[in-house]
Image (cartoon, rainbow, N blue to C red; front, side, top):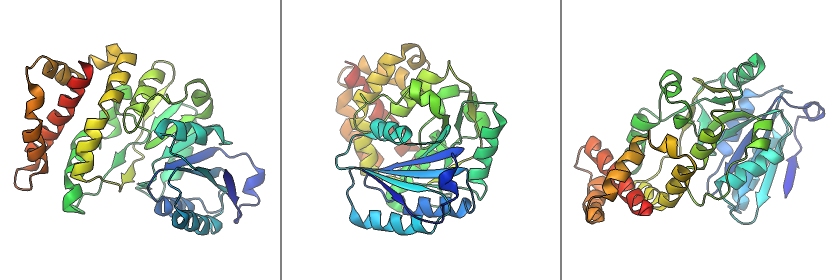
Length: 311
């Protein structure tokens, strides 16, 4: 189901957009993101926004999005699926309904980190110097809630890197939370729908396209607001093990260069390594152990489950 919201975009609707902004969500509310994007796209005829509900089925969120969209100056379309079809399928569906030659994927729990966020992406697109742009992301510098502080610290040390730092590793630090791509690339190389649940479908896509297309890491970060609780992190890292194995099987040469892969392979050969998990989980949950040690325990917890999945 698709609903085109009637707003101030009558002229824009008659013009093919330069950029389609694509926002999937599942049990998140992208209202703040939509509001922020509309604030940056007043009188823009170059943009359209598509938002896809991947099985949330929350009338309050729909009402909020519709109300915000009506105040905008760019076309906004709301797409719905009654059942959750997964992260890869949601992104493929959004792309299939986009009109522009470039698409920008943003996660529902992100916000532009600067007022010229959209303008900077349009500048990159117009330059015609690349095919794929990853803008990166950042997190709040201050502790927002004790229960999400571990995720904030993990992101700061592992994910929130400058364009210069990310460029050194090519596709390794690409993810779909803030990803701009030529539409025709996704026609040829859609996201792999065989990934189930959370994790690694965007890493696999990046690894698959990196040798075929021009990838640019840019400093156009989005602010990640949806930090997870410690319990959610533990569960996600455990449940994503089969996805990681699938990813590494598809890209064995790349996998051999990754620290996580090397660690999980070493743990495979440690007798009874999974017996350490209760201690690792207790360390991760602890409020008195230094954050650095909790992060080490979290990474070992993930590697332990991945090691078992490889066996």
